[in-house]
Structures are given as structure tokens and as C-alpha cells.
Length: 202
Image 1 (cartoon, rainbow, N blue to C red):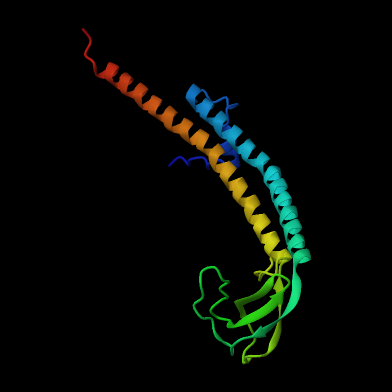
Image 2 (cartoon, one colour):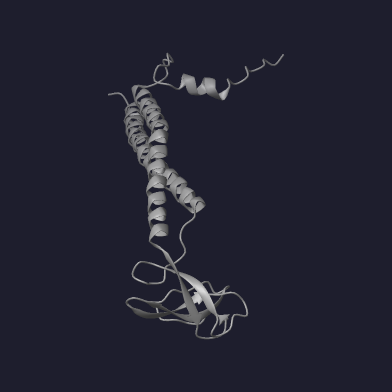
């Protein structure tokens, strides 16, 4: 009768047996060193999670303060359309460029520092001479769109995940380099042993 081979151990058990505390006599000293490097790297990667979360929370708070400050400094002023609404034209690089999917028109508004003109998004079928409301800063300059709370959250989460990924990659690089160096050392040792075996006795 054919002897049945024992079923392989579950993956967690195999990982446990590969730890530096294993009593397996076939494990070399270099294997235990490599297992220790991997264990330390995994522990540090897990410890990075709360630090990344704290970094994301701080980033969200900073972005919220910036958004609130921008909202506080904005002013709503009337602006007169100088032309009928049409697809966004080419404008100088120093002027805001609305999305090409939006209708736009050139407008003029007055501030204590003088008159200003710019191309702004408008509703469809707006005509020249019509008055719309735009947002300007304390100097009377046209402002772009302000981030929403959802945008701040997305940026903060992205920053936290990026910080954790960057830190984890740097930590994981250490055991990877250690594995490469230990493997190279083992190959050299095996080559010396095979050379000693193949050498004819005197």
C-alpha cells in the first residue's frame, strides 16, 4: 500500500515555525537573522498606522483652517457681462481659465483700487449687460473655487495613506536588502563546500 503523506500545516502555523524562536535544527543562523529582520519590519509597519492617522488628522485640521480663512476673506460683488455667453475662449496665462465644459463670458467689476476684468463661468444664454455676482478677495481680485469639506477629507486621507506607504516601503527595504545579502553569503558558502567535496584527496 502507498503510504499517505501528511497534510501540510496551515499557513499561520508554517509562518510560526519560520520564526526566529523555532526549534527546528535545520534552520541556520542566517535564517534566524532574516526571520528577525522580517518580524521587526512587520512590527514597525503596524506601528506606523497610528502615526499616519495622526498626520492625516493634522493635515485635515490645517486644510479646514485654510478653507475657513479663505471663506472669511471672500466678498460677493456685482459684475457686468461685457459679452454674451460662449464657450471658454483662449485667455492670457495670468487670467483664470474656467473648465471648457462651462459657458463663460468676460465681466467687469469695480473695487476701491480700480476696475477689473476677467473671464468667469456663467449660466447658459447670459447676455451682455447682465449683472452677476462673483467672489473676490480683499484686494478685489477674482478668486478660484474654494475646497469643500469633502475635498479636505480626501486630501487628508490621501496624505495619511501616502505617508504610511512611504514609511512602510522604506522599512520593508531593510529586510529585502538583508535577504539579498544573506542569500549571496549562503551561495558563496555552498560554492566553497562543493569545491571542497569535489577536490580529490591527496
